[in-house]
Image 1 (tube, rainbow, N blue to C red):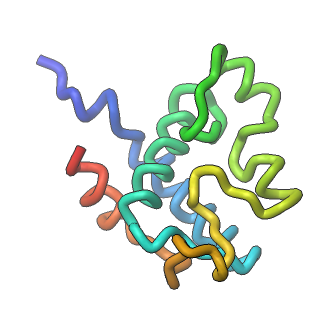
Image 2 (cartoon, rainbow, N blue to C red):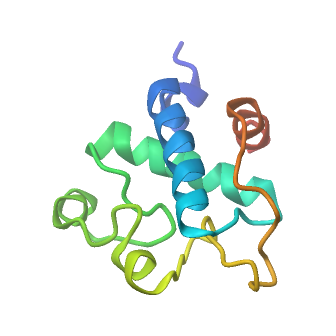
Length: 120
């Protein structure tokens, strides 16, 4: 019998890769994770799962007709073009400090991510 979490959760390797990327990017851009770390955890899990499945960290917060084509186009690969150009993160992963949803953290542990995503 197959474990259903194995198919819904990202590999540890890509989750750790996305966690490290997000922490570094937040510090470099002066942005913060959402005050609700559950949001941060779910977004990072989604990015890592897309990296597993598509080979690229495609934004997990959007609907795509063809995920593979979108990943190849790179526009919505994290950090997406709107984030790079205007610091607009639809996923609420990277928030400016004046955003009402911004927390004060630029770090999240692997265990915090899995603790949050295991709730679903």
